[in-house]
Length: 314
Image (cartoon, rainbow, N blue to C red):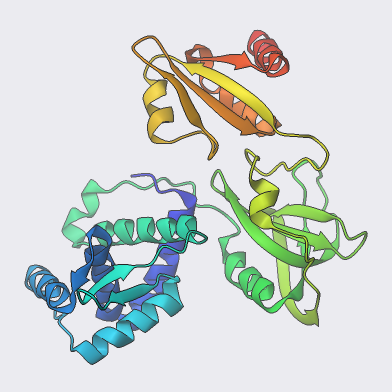
Protein backbone atom coordinates (compact mmCIF):
# COMPACT_ATOMS: atom_id res chain seq x y z
CA UNK A 1 0.00 0.00 0.00
CA UNK A 2 1.62 3.22 -1.14
CA UNK A 3 0.89 6.35 0.87
CA UNK A 4 0.92 9.83 -0.57
CA UNK A 5 3.36 12.21 1.07
CA UNK A 6 0.82 14.46 2.70
CA UNK A 7 -0.86 11.42 4.20
CA UNK A 8 2.49 10.16 5.45
CA UNK A 9 3.19 13.46 7.17
CA UNK A 10 -0.21 13.62 8.82
CA UNK A 11 0.13 9.99 9.86
CA UNK A 12 3.34 10.81 11.70
CA UNK A 13 1.38 13.60 13.41
CA UNK A 14 -1.43 11.24 14.40
CA UNK A 15 0.98 8.58 15.64
CA UNK A 16 2.65 11.12 17.91
CA UNK A 17 -0.65 12.19 19.42
CA UNK A 18 -1.86 8.63 19.67
CA UNK A 19 1.20 7.70 21.72
CA UNK A 20 0.49 10.61 24.06
CA UNK A 21 -3.32 10.42 24.24
CA UNK A 22 -4.24 6.84 23.39
CA UNK A 23 -7.98 6.31 22.96
CA UNK A 24 -8.69 10.08 23.01
CA UNK A 25 -7.16 10.45 19.56
CA UNK A 26 -9.00 7.36 18.34
CA UNK A 27 -12.26 8.78 19.68
CA UNK A 28 -11.65 12.04 17.81
CA UNK A 29 -11.15 10.03 14.64
CA UNK A 30 -14.39 8.11 15.16
CA UNK A 31 -16.39 11.28 15.83
CA UNK A 32 -15.11 12.84 12.62
CA UNK A 33 -15.79 9.67 10.64
CA UNK A 34 -19.39 9.57 11.87
CA UNK A 35 -20.15 13.25 11.15
CA UNK A 36 -18.42 13.12 7.76
CA UNK A 37 -21.10 10.80 6.42
CA UNK A 38 -23.99 13.03 7.50
CA UNK A 39 -24.93 15.35 10.38
CA UNK A 40 -25.79 13.43 13.55
CA UNK A 41 -27.28 14.09 16.96
CA UNK A 42 -25.28 13.54 20.13
CA UNK A 43 -27.30 10.38 20.81
CA UNK A 44 -26.53 9.00 17.34
CA UNK A 45 -22.83 9.75 17.79
CA UNK A 46 -22.81 8.00 21.17
CA UNK A 47 -24.57 4.96 19.68
CA UNK A 48 -21.86 4.82 17.02
CA UNK A 49 -19.10 5.14 19.64
CA UNK A 50 -20.75 2.38 21.66
CA UNK A 51 -20.75 0.02 18.68
CA UNK A 52 -17.08 0.82 17.97
CA UNK A 53 -16.31 0.24 21.65
CA UNK A 54 -17.68 -3.30 21.39
CA UNK A 55 -15.85 -3.97 18.12
CA UNK A 56 -12.48 -2.68 19.32
CA UNK A 57 -12.94 -3.78 22.96
CA UNK A 58 -12.32 -0.23 24.19
CA UNK A 59 -14.46 2.45 25.82
CA UNK A 60 -15.13 5.41 23.53
CA UNK A 61 -18.45 6.45 25.12
CA UNK A 62 -18.31 9.89 26.77
CA UNK A 63 -20.55 12.44 28.46
CA UNK A 64 -21.90 15.52 26.69
CA UNK A 65 -19.36 17.67 28.55
CA UNK A 66 -16.44 15.52 27.36
CA UNK A 67 -17.89 15.52 23.85
CA UNK A 68 -17.91 19.33 23.85
CA UNK A 69 -14.25 19.30 24.90
CA UNK A 70 -13.54 16.84 22.06
CA UNK A 71 -15.04 19.31 19.58
CA UNK A 72 -12.74 22.06 20.88
CA UNK A 73 -9.66 19.80 20.72
CA UNK A 74 -10.49 18.62 17.19
CA UNK A 75 -10.57 22.25 16.04
CA UNK A 76 -7.28 23.10 17.79
CA UNK A 77 -5.39 19.99 16.68
CA UNK A 78 -6.67 19.33 13.19
CA UNK A 79 -8.31 22.61 12.14
CA UNK A 80 -11.57 20.72 11.61
CA UNK A 81 -14.56 22.64 12.91
CA UNK A 82 -17.70 20.91 14.17
CA UNK A 83 -20.83 22.94 14.85
CA UNK A 84 -24.30 22.28 16.20
CA UNK A 85 -27.40 22.93 14.11
CA UNK A 86 -29.84 24.04 16.79
CA UNK A 87 -32.88 23.61 14.53
CA UNK A 88 -32.53 19.80 14.58
CA UNK A 89 -29.80 19.49 17.24
CA UNK A 90 -27.34 17.76 14.90
CA UNK A 91 -23.58 18.18 14.63
CA UNK A 92 -21.89 18.76 11.27
CA UNK A 93 -18.48 19.52 9.73
CA UNK A 94 -17.99 23.14 8.71
CA UNK A 95 -16.70 23.82 5.21
CA UNK A 96 -15.50 27.43 5.06
CA UNK A 97 -14.37 27.10 1.43
CA UNK A 98 -10.82 28.24 2.20
CA UNK A 99 -9.45 25.27 4.11
CA UNK A 100 -11.34 22.53 2.25
CA UNK A 101 -8.24 21.09 0.53
CA UNK A 102 -6.27 20.96 3.77
CA UNK A 103 -9.19 19.40 5.63
CA UNK A 104 -9.58 16.79 2.90
CA UNK A 105 -5.94 15.79 3.36
CA UNK A 106 -6.42 15.58 7.13
CA UNK A 107 -9.54 13.45 6.68
CA UNK A 108 -7.70 11.28 4.15
CA UNK A 109 -5.01 10.72 6.76
CA UNK A 110 -7.65 9.88 9.37
CA UNK A 111 -9.03 7.16 7.09
CA UNK A 112 -5.56 5.75 6.46
CA UNK A 113 -4.61 5.92 10.12
CA UNK A 114 -7.76 4.07 11.14
CA UNK A 115 -7.15 1.40 8.51
CA UNK A 116 -3.58 0.90 9.67
CA UNK A 117 -4.32 1.08 13.38
CA UNK A 118 -5.12 -2.63 13.42
CA UNK A 119 -3.92 -5.80 15.03
CA UNK A 120 -0.37 -6.92 14.28
CA UNK A 121 -1.88 -10.09 12.87
CA UNK A 122 -2.89 -8.08 9.79
CA UNK A 123 0.54 -6.53 9.24
CA UNK A 124 1.43 -9.22 6.68
CA UNK A 125 -1.32 -7.82 4.45
CA UNK A 126 0.10 -4.29 4.37
CA UNK A 127 2.92 -3.15 2.12
CA UNK A 128 4.29 0.39 2.30
CA UNK A 129 6.08 2.43 -0.31
CA UNK A 130 9.65 2.50 1.03
CA UNK A 131 10.38 5.94 -0.42
CA UNK A 132 10.25 7.75 2.91
CA UNK A 133 10.29 11.48 2.12
CA UNK A 134 13.39 13.21 3.53
CA UNK A 135 13.12 16.60 5.19
CA UNK A 136 9.74 16.15 6.87
CA UNK A 137 11.40 16.78 10.24
CA UNK A 138 11.68 20.42 9.17
CA UNK A 139 7.92 20.86 8.68
CA UNK A 140 7.00 21.64 12.27
CA UNK A 141 9.69 24.27 13.00
CA UNK A 142 9.10 25.95 9.63
CA UNK A 143 5.35 26.08 10.21
CA UNK A 144 5.95 27.59 13.62
CA UNK A 145 8.23 30.22 12.08
CA UNK A 146 5.59 31.01 9.44
CA UNK A 147 2.98 31.42 12.15
CA UNK A 148 5.23 33.67 14.25
CA UNK A 149 6.69 35.56 11.24
CA UNK A 150 10.25 34.88 12.37
CA UNK A 151 13.36 34.20 10.25
CA UNK A 152 14.87 30.75 9.80
CA UNK A 153 18.51 29.92 9.10
CA UNK A 154 19.82 26.81 7.35
CA UNK A 155 22.45 25.34 5.05
CA UNK A 156 21.21 24.55 1.55
CA UNK A 157 22.63 22.11 -0.99
CA UNK A 158 21.43 22.20 -4.59
CA UNK A 159 21.12 18.99 -6.61
CA UNK A 160 23.30 20.39 -9.37
CA UNK A 161 26.11 21.39 -7.02
CA UNK A 162 28.45 19.07 -5.16
CA UNK A 163 29.16 21.60 -2.43
CA UNK A 164 26.72 23.41 -0.18
CA UNK A 165 25.75 26.93 -1.14
CA UNK A 166 26.34 28.23 2.38
CA UNK A 167 24.01 29.51 5.05
CA UNK A 168 20.70 31.09 4.16
CA UNK A 169 18.61 33.46 6.25
CA UNK A 170 15.07 33.67 4.92
CA UNK A 171 11.54 34.80 5.71
CA UNK A 172 9.37 31.64 5.48
CA UNK A 173 6.07 32.33 3.74
CA UNK A 174 4.57 28.93 3.00
CA UNK A 175 5.00 25.23 2.27
CA UNK A 176 4.10 23.27 -0.87
CA UNK A 177 3.99 19.56 -1.55
CA UNK A 178 4.82 17.95 -4.89
CA UNK A 179 5.72 14.37 -5.73
CA UNK A 180 6.90 12.94 -2.43
CA UNK A 181 8.72 16.16 -1.53
CA UNK A 182 8.00 19.31 0.47
CA UNK A 183 9.19 22.78 -0.48
CA UNK A 184 9.46 25.99 1.52
CA UNK A 185 8.55 29.22 -0.22
CA UNK A 186 10.53 32.03 1.36
CA UNK A 187 11.80 35.54 0.78
CA UNK A 188 15.59 35.67 0.77
CA UNK A 189 16.98 38.39 3.02
CA UNK A 190 19.66 38.95 0.38
CA UNK A 191 17.94 40.58 -2.56
CA UNK A 192 14.40 40.03 -1.24
CA UNK A 193 13.58 37.56 -4.04
CA UNK A 194 10.95 34.91 -3.31
CA UNK A 195 12.52 31.48 -3.77
CA UNK A 196 11.65 27.81 -3.37
CA UNK A 197 13.77 25.51 -1.19
CA UNK A 198 13.43 21.71 -1.13
CA UNK A 199 13.22 20.49 2.47
CA UNK A 200 15.24 17.41 1.54
CA UNK A 201 18.19 19.69 0.71
CA UNK A 202 18.04 21.66 3.96
CA UNK A 203 20.37 20.90 6.86
CA UNK A 204 21.20 22.56 10.18
CA UNK A 205 17.83 24.31 10.29
CA UNK A 206 17.55 26.86 13.09
CA UNK A 207 14.57 28.99 13.99
CA UNK A 208 15.30 32.48 15.25
CA UNK A 209 13.44 35.18 17.16
CA UNK A 210 14.17 37.75 14.49
CA UNK A 211 10.82 39.09 13.23
CA UNK A 212 9.97 39.94 9.64
CA UNK A 213 7.04 41.64 7.98
CA UNK A 214 5.09 39.36 5.68
CA UNK A 215 4.64 40.89 2.19
CA UNK A 216 1.08 42.20 2.00
CA UNK A 217 0.71 41.23 -1.64
CA UNK A 218 1.92 37.64 -1.18
CA UNK A 219 -0.70 34.92 -1.72
CA UNK A 220 0.52 31.32 -1.79
CA UNK A 221 -2.63 30.00 -3.47
CA UNK A 222 -2.47 32.61 -6.21
CA UNK A 223 1.25 31.98 -6.70
CA UNK A 224 0.64 28.32 -7.56
CA UNK A 225 -2.91 28.51 -8.98
CA UNK A 226 -1.75 27.77 -12.54
CA UNK A 227 1.40 25.84 -11.68
CA UNK A 228 2.17 22.19 -12.22
CA UNK A 229 4.91 21.41 -9.72
CA UNK A 230 6.95 24.14 -8.07
CA UNK A 231 7.86 26.32 -11.04
CA UNK A 232 6.02 29.64 -10.85
CA UNK A 233 6.92 31.98 -13.74
CA UNK A 234 6.60 35.67 -12.87
CA UNK A 235 6.15 37.09 -16.37
CA UNK A 236 4.64 34.25 -18.40
CA UNK A 237 0.87 33.91 -18.74
CA UNK A 238 -0.81 30.51 -18.23
CA UNK A 239 -1.60 28.55 -21.39
CA UNK A 240 -4.79 26.78 -22.43
CA UNK A 241 -3.81 23.13 -22.92
CA UNK A 242 -5.91 20.44 -24.59
CA UNK A 243 -5.00 16.79 -24.16
CA UNK A 244 -6.56 13.64 -25.58
CA UNK A 245 -6.17 10.38 -23.64
CA UNK A 246 -6.84 6.84 -24.84
CA UNK A 247 -6.38 3.44 -23.26
CA UNK A 248 -6.54 2.72 -19.55
CA UNK A 249 -4.71 5.94 -18.61
CA UNK A 250 -7.90 7.88 -19.26
CA UNK A 251 -9.44 6.32 -16.16
CA UNK A 252 -6.58 7.55 -14.01
CA UNK A 253 -7.01 11.08 -15.35
CA UNK A 254 -10.75 10.93 -14.67
CA UNK A 255 -10.37 9.84 -11.06
CA UNK A 256 -7.27 11.91 -10.30
CA UNK A 257 -7.18 15.07 -12.46
CA UNK A 258 -3.82 16.36 -13.67
CA UNK A 259 -4.58 19.85 -12.39
CA UNK A 260 -7.24 21.74 -10.45
CA UNK A 261 -8.26 23.59 -13.64
CA UNK A 262 -9.03 20.39 -15.54
CA UNK A 263 -12.39 20.28 -17.32
CA UNK A 264 -13.75 17.51 -19.55
CA UNK A 265 -14.36 18.35 -23.22
CA UNK A 266 -14.99 14.89 -24.69
CA UNK A 267 -15.74 11.61 -22.95
CA UNK A 268 -16.63 8.71 -25.22
CA UNK A 269 -15.34 5.29 -26.24
CA UNK A 270 -12.72 6.79 -28.55
CA UNK A 271 -11.10 9.39 -26.31
CA UNK A 272 -11.12 11.36 -23.09
CA UNK A 273 -10.27 14.97 -23.90
CA UNK A 274 -9.53 17.56 -21.24
CA UNK A 275 -8.64 21.22 -21.07
CA UNK A 276 -6.23 22.73 -18.55
CA UNK A 277 -5.07 26.24 -17.81
CA UNK A 278 -1.51 26.28 -16.48
CA UNK A 279 2.11 27.27 -16.98
CA UNK A 280 3.99 24.93 -19.29
CA UNK A 281 6.85 23.85 -17.06
CA UNK A 282 9.51 21.18 -17.28
CA UNK A 283 7.61 19.19 -14.65
CA UNK A 284 4.46 19.25 -16.79
CA UNK A 285 6.31 18.13 -19.94
CA UNK A 286 7.87 15.24 -18.01
CA UNK A 287 4.43 14.28 -16.72
CA UNK A 288 3.04 14.10 -20.25
CA UNK A 289 6.00 12.05 -21.45
CA UNK A 290 5.28 9.47 -18.74
CA UNK A 291 1.97 8.63 -20.48
CA UNK A 292 3.73 7.64 -23.70
CA UNK A 293 1.51 7.18 -26.74
CA UNK A 294 -1.66 7.17 -24.64
CA UNK A 295 -1.77 10.96 -24.60
CA UNK A 296 -1.83 13.38 -27.52
CA UNK A 297 -1.23 17.10 -27.14
CA UNK A 298 -3.78 19.04 -29.20
CA UNK A 299 -3.02 22.56 -27.97
CA UNK A 300 -0.90 24.65 -27.83
CA UNK A 301 1.39 23.99 -30.79
CA UNK A 302 4.60 24.76 -28.88
CA UNK A 303 3.80 22.17 -26.21
CA UNK A 304 2.91 19.60 -28.88
CA UNK A 305 6.28 20.24 -30.53
CA UNK A 306 8.14 19.93 -27.21
CA UNK A 307 6.56 16.57 -26.40
CA UNK A 308 7.07 15.20 -29.92
CA UNK A 309 10.75 16.20 -29.93
CA UNK A 310 11.30 14.64 -26.51
CA UNK A 311 9.60 11.42 -27.62
CA UNK A 312 11.88 11.23 -30.67
CA UNK A 313 14.93 11.76 -28.44
CA UNK A 314 13.81 9.03 -26.07
